[in-house]
Image (cartoon, rainbow, N blue to C red):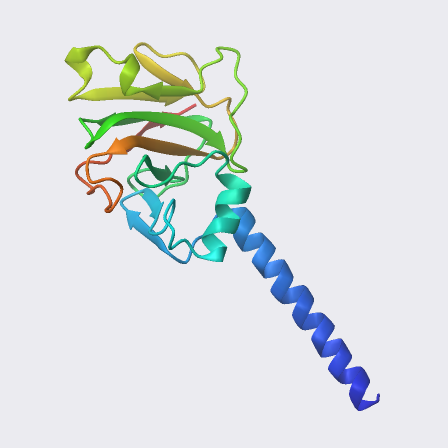
Length: 191
């Protein structure tokens, strides 16, 4: 084999491996600039002028209509508090309190970042829909079957993610919420 052929083969292999790895990484939404806070993950540079090209690629693919950090902070969880992946055949209790923001919403997505189809047509629970008595101590049941109170259906998909959006954060999006401020995700059992 000639020397130029070896170089060409190595270049092609390198491009395929490098390009494939980059595409998989962006599609997975993995960010090199992320903060883990319990089961919740947020990007350090989401919605800022300092956002890297990599962060911008992930947001372009998975964060449709993402707002600047001064207007909204985004936290995503793919696991419960124990670190186990969120399973659509199981039931989870998500509990929280008042967040340092004007209002918030909790939405269930499939792993590709799309809303999960369900017969009830329920896709999100938010602070605007909670009675005043529940604002400081709220609870949402996430389960495949209807549950009393606030409920998000899983559609029995194999794996899902939760996204917490905190709108108009008190610190104008300059920092992260603490583990004590973010909701807890506890598995209540599986079918």
